[in-house]
Length: 298
Image (cartoon, rainbow, N blue to C red; front, side):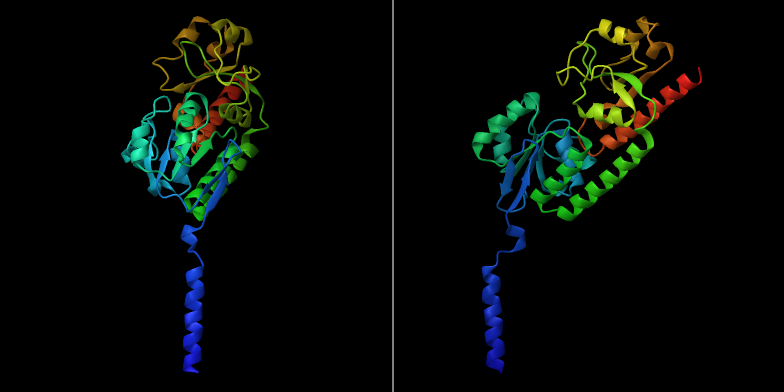
């Protein structure tokens, strides 16, 4: 009998040796460019090349594995202590290689996409991030958590994001539409079209983007076009420029000026496609509600 027990124990040990540990199992996720990213094991050295990606990685529970970030990755506060590898316009490829990442998460848009293409021939696994709607943000948190082996944390964060999103939709989406000009830059005068995530936030709040039908994601427009559209509110992200609304006060006939609907919002919250966009959206919804209240009181 003792020999039999010893034999069973030896057999069990031999079988266990044949089974690879879970920590080293391959992981896969589909990115926003519809590419399957596969890693031989969960990522333990991650470089984030966009502020929104940094925020999503922390939300997914992978913050401890980030070894490099792009410029302006300033949230959460811990991100400020991570070494910088340059900006989306100018990456330090040598620095990135020195960090020996097993995963790079980058922004698949504009100049950032061009920079990302320089990394692809180097054989580093790249997750291309470009969420265009709220649902994609929740999915991205789950997918990044899968690649980092932090599935439980990512699932909880995504679940909380979806619950809060539903509450905002139930509260604001059916309210009276408010026409909005959303200004992202003054000179040249630039806005965002209906495909951008900011427009999704506007729609959730019952806002109507006056330039939503333009084909470019971030088109340049004229003052005359804004005056002709005569929006009820002009919204600009804080930190863009000092006294960003001063030029509009030259047009006292504009509804937004006459009614005092020159709305400032934190660009770091609403312009970044990360989990904090719901903070920015909630703020926008409250401010567009104030616009409605002024009209009802007239």
